[in-house]
Length: 336
Ligand code: AHG
Ligand code: MN
Ligand code: MN
Ligand code: MN
Image (cartoon, rainbow, N blue to C red; front, side):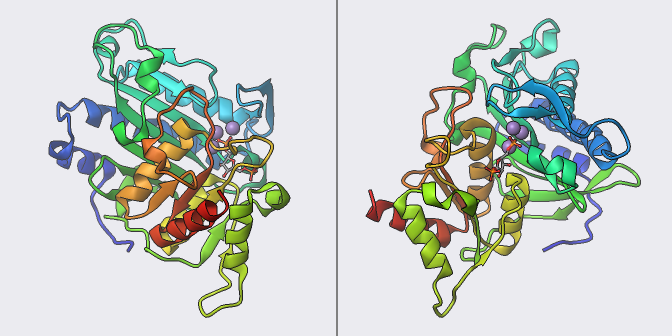
């Protein structure tokens, strides 16, 4: 799939501007701002062991998680970049209890877009030099332009997303995104700081042989998930499947995108609705998965059709190759 394309992300954004639902150039500027912020975060992540950026920040976030210094740095970088460049009217982040209204500057006030973001995904992997990422989601505001944003602008179902993407600060740094017209992946050339189109029109295989779940929580999983995992492990013609779990959603999702597979974070852990956040993690990944020909479900229904009720809402997540997610849903339904 990877090519030696010489097209840069910047060129790609401009060339595809005509495809955007709102082709005023505003979305292009917003995507370019996200691109810039990812380069700043990438720069910091890359030298994490050399500068004083590893370890805990000393605060708990609204999720009840111990914030890492890089969680805070990435959050501030995205918020500052997007607000200074006046490309959004509001931002909601995993790391902030409330949404942020971008006030003041004329452009922000009149912007049509809100961004929802998981600035640093895979926090627990930072200190051990395993890949982390960023996940973002863009919506058109539903309240009137020029007025202050409200919660309503952020509590939209995933099927209203205008764009979504993720970044992996990994072996190489990649930015993968969709505007509802397929999925494209770009790899950063760190020498010159430019993203190049390396994975055009990404498609997730319909079937796969990798399952990705934190099996340490097995005894707390719903019976449907337990049964599905036994199915994955059965010694049959095309099984057992292989188990791979990095613990950074971005990385586990990306591997499944390329190789085929299923990612599951079910209910039944310490939180009755699982761990992953509907707005910052599940909806953007669901949009990308579907755009690549895959599927995303809470075990029973399409993730992107769920009406959110709160900003930091959690939801069980089954995502990846279409036929694998369908199979997992069958197991869930049979134990309903
Ligand atoms: P975050 O670092 O943004 O809080 O997200 C962590 C998420 C996700 O990246 C990962 O797949 C999952 O938490 C891992 O959770 P467990 O350690 O419970 O398996
Ligand atoms: Mn977190
Ligand atoms: Mn996350
Ligand atoms: Mn995070």
